[in-house]
Image 1 (cartoon, rainbow, N blue to C red):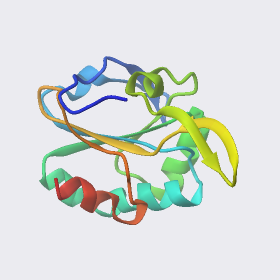
Image 2: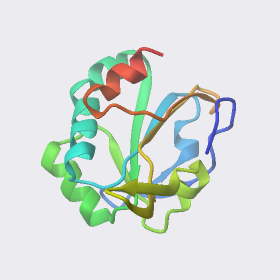
Image 3: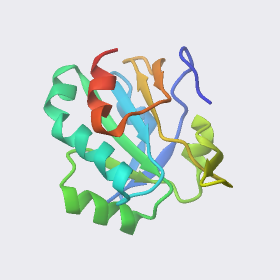
Length: 149
């Protein structure tokens, strides 16, 4: 998994509208990238809505936001439209970005073991250096976790 001090990996994905988004678009800005397992699921919705509800505070602190999951563009579009998120959601169906950040890991739920995205938030400074990794994301207070850093 990406660690504090690591450089923002180069990547290109497509957002909910099918528009290309590159990591280089964010250089010169503070960036929050949050990885979530699946669009429109209860916990992911709580997290994404908390970030949306606190978007003005995050912007005031200088942050740009980007959400990434392995969902299709269509699913991201539906999720984005349903809740009118003020930030882009990246569809990473082939897991290129997910793998670069190291958040595709073995998970256990109800005794079942499987591979999936581990909910993780990364903060980067204006030079693209990772300044914080939040591994234990609390969906209801995700924005507070970012701002308390």
